[in-house]
Length: 353
Image (cartoon, rainbow, N blue to C red; front, top):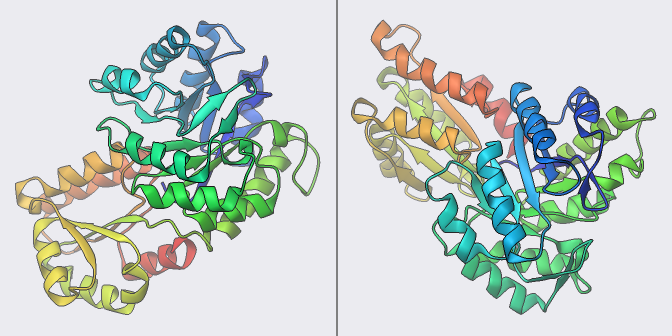
């Protein structure tokens, strides 16, 4: 994901009793990534909450706070049954990760030693970064959930060390209640952060009272912090044959910016850009005619792309449009920006890169 915030319908590490009612305020404020804990509400209520988030077009997150093995495994099974998009937290990745292999749930366990409730992160910067590295090596671990501001030490150093330990995304959770902390998370290279209790307490300066105003304020802070984010984005670059020269020209204009990010291309486009701009980090998929567009669609569906730039040929044969329409549908469904012209792509660069 591009640098963003996940609103947690929680207070003091528990899902709030009126979570489904407060969800309306969170959505009205503009949040799209929304989560809750595995404690605080009965399972059937959590199931209804997850369904409401999905119905709104949002992405649903379940965060584990249980510390014993039986409860954590029960929470992992709940994530599968609730059909959330992401499972955050937990300390038994070696046991939980295999459970998720046959399911689309993306898994972000806690690195380091987690104790107590509310949870505290123990260890040194070195031991926590080493834990992060070992967790990220597991196939079905898709990222990490770092309790950075629950750490009694140099938090900026810890965040940078963990983000540097892996190429997988890091979400920073717990006790983020100021814009300075949001900026520090972005500068460290994290992909996202969570906010829950602080917003319910009105901790953020906002124009107006209430939860809607808090969410709007956090979104504005997130946008400002995004400009200082050091996390590399994953950007798909594709073009129909008659538009490849325009895409190449666009890439050359933004060469310096794109060199800091990971580029994914279908076969023909990737070959062209790789030869023309060898300094770029380009991963080639199959050619479009061999399923490359479908591979891109799969990356969108699993949350592995931050944006798609697809320079489409408006005068091409109608048969070429079906793959693009399918890709656009998935991008809309999963709230991934997609640009089909140089001007639109320029706006994405200005806003996010």
